[in-house]
Length: 482
Image 1 (cartoon, rainbow, N blue to C red):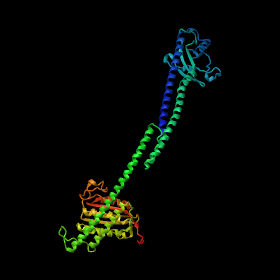
Image 2 (image 1 turned 120 degrees about the horizontal axis):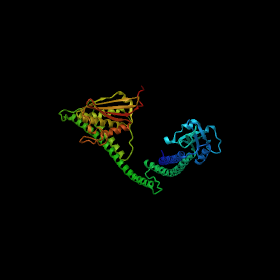
Image 3 (image 1 turned 90 degrees about the vertical axis):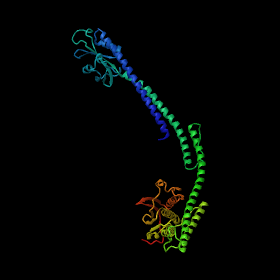
Image 4 (image 1 turned 180 degrees about the vertical axis):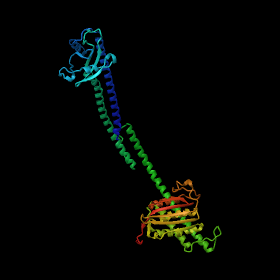
């Protein structure tokens, strides 16, 4: 509902209710006053009938009718109409037979002395008021068919006209008042609605980020004060937005740099562990458990170290791009190559820490490519790093749903799982329970999953922690046709 209607409708309803109330009150007062006058009139007639001792013949009845502006009828003890004159609602209107009361109608009129009621009767097209009076026993002759009762009938049109006049004045005044109020309300509310509409348009522009929008201030009333407050708010929002953009740029650069530094540290740690394994293999040195650490025969420790250093170099390049506010260019890679690189580089870390990684990778990974291989390897690498830090038995499995072009990687470990205190904020930046941790690993995994068109979830199942990474893949151009 528009502002004009919201302001006009209550005023209209209030005026309408007031008009109806005044009209009903006027009607009640008019009916009460006219009824009181009619009762006084019939009371005087009753008193005159009781005190009179003259015969009520047609001539006398005609004279009484002229004096009282009523029609008089007399009846005998057996209900026979003895005398009376025709009822004329209007002098110039011919009398119809239906307008004359019959014997049955006259005798059905209640006695005024017994009930105090004045009957309403209809003769033809007109309404009348009538009352029946008992003639005193000593006021007439003691002969057959002597007058026993008198019926006085009064035209009710004048009383009804008085009632109509009484209610027409407040009704007309009320309706005219309503019309004036509606017209004035529409004019005022339309003007206010236009001002509110201009202010709303300015607020919508400000809400869309145009904080320098000039706000229309055209008066010194409450709406003008609101417009000035909106203009002041827009200036404050402009200043806050500039500060927020600077802070957001710094925060984004900080998070990107921290995340890349986190991956850089993982890569350098893997390279260091590979070099240490190479030294231990060459010199026969043992680890803290007194056992000589070794890698699978197909892995060369120095090759692993070189691969880790190459990843570190790529991370440094990304940090430099972020510092120059340059856009990172994705590097598409075949899924099989991504997992082969991860398997090569992380085996040294797992062997150094006494963890065992089981890889379950289908051959169809060679048929699909991911949009950014380095981002995917960083995400899966962080999941495996966390698994190595938490448990000893790690399982990495991958699968591709060619129909939906979606790949799923699951990393499972037998560790105790995340602390329940951080379950709800597990993927938020800088949330960690590790003493030497930064809380960026899982946050980077989530960001990587979103950039690759997927998501990351986790669950505790059979006393094991399972992280599942879902991302979008494309069919490789060299992939064999099914």
